[in-house]
Length: 108
Image (cartoon, rainbow, N blue to C red; front, side, top):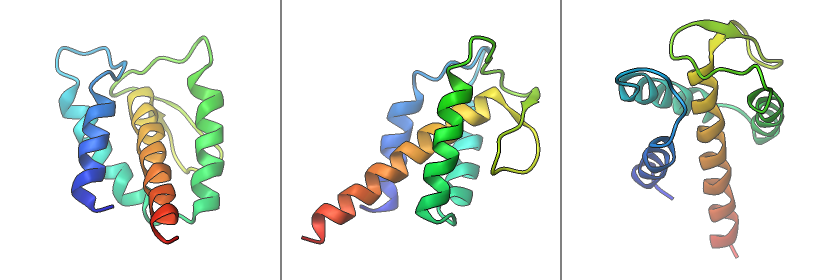
């Protein structure tokens, strides 16, 4: 799967992002570009581990997908992140996982 298809899939997924701002597209786009660049460098095992940590965090009742306030830390990642950034990372990891599954199927 090429990068264009991956970005199209991510744009489609991110249209429903829970980001409480008047214009969340600016943040979502920037976070998507950043996380695609970062996560593509990770080994698949690290992607899976981070995705699992994200699932736990994103389902907490007190989680807020704020666009700029960096309240959250995550095992396996250095620093503090906004909720919107982590929602975007989760979607990027899902798209990369699907991309990897597509490659495995096409190798048969």
